[in-house]
Length: 255
Length: 222
Image (cartoon, rainbow over all chains, first blue to last red; front, side):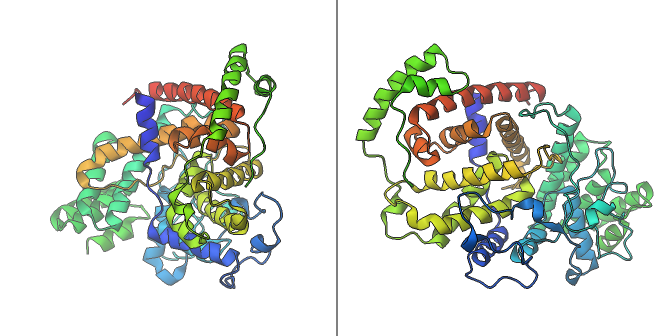
């Protein structure tokens, strides 16, 4: 029975990474007063537990979180990578950790690429990390704090979601594949990353996300110790995307 | 958490649900009998709760994933989930003294999850914020990428289908058909009558089936 299979898949959904768990737990402890609040915490927000009356949560839910810039302490390159991870994927793990350990300060504000956008034209998080890397500037609404989230909003008819055009479903599948490549690389599994990247290349030869896929492919090839192929692919990247903000990453990867 | 007494007037209870039919009323009478049976039966205890005072940390370790996934199923946006998980546990910390340790734990937790999600949805912008991003899938082995992608798409489809169900019915459906909690426990945890719970479940199942069929058709049932 297909419905039962679907529900079984959802039932088996994975949980948080241990880093995210720790971050959430730290936030819980701060809120219940077991730990002193971080100096960065918004003093207006972090008073939930003792004074809260009634069953509903206080106004400390998501809309009050603010957009802040990528931490520069991690270095420009990592900062750029984190920003890119946030651009394309979900909330990056490192960004999540930083966000929750200092409550109410969001480190990376996720901004989804516009439906037509390549990386060069999509809105980017305001980034303090890149004087030398030409990431596109965030639109003013995304860089001010507190800011509305820079999701590309899809106005949906009430209580139904089944009107997303096939194009969006395809884009979702593309992002899934690239997310898989990224997480595989993060845990050092270059082979899995290559499989995901090859699947994406096969299914989406003219993808708007090709630029980013190529970066992941090059990183995976280097990770798999296939330097000559990595260099060839980097050369193709230079030809196909000469003005890409990701070019410096590519160059560094194949050094 | 003491639940209100279930309805003693099944016909009236059935009529309060928007689409109660004569069938509903008749079946509600059967449910009244079920109810009497259920109440006289000992409900199973969660093994973890038969030990002395609950420690928030161990509850957290055991249930944090389930809390996060449940919030998602109740329509909380991906990026907001960690904040809301935190709120759920902060609330739990406060009301843990009121928890009746002889009751199963998960339904009680789900009650907190539900109230948290309901408040979130009231506060959040009415528009659906959809950037089309799926949560990053975990791949167990490189050989299973295709299957992992398929499973991930199935999960996404389930979430989309759930979005078409009103929250108060959706909560019953999630508890029953995903978490496999017995309906009497669901009724207690959500503070609703048993008949109401059954009625909502039936409606939600219809809605879910219809939405899933629509979505499956659109994706070509790959």
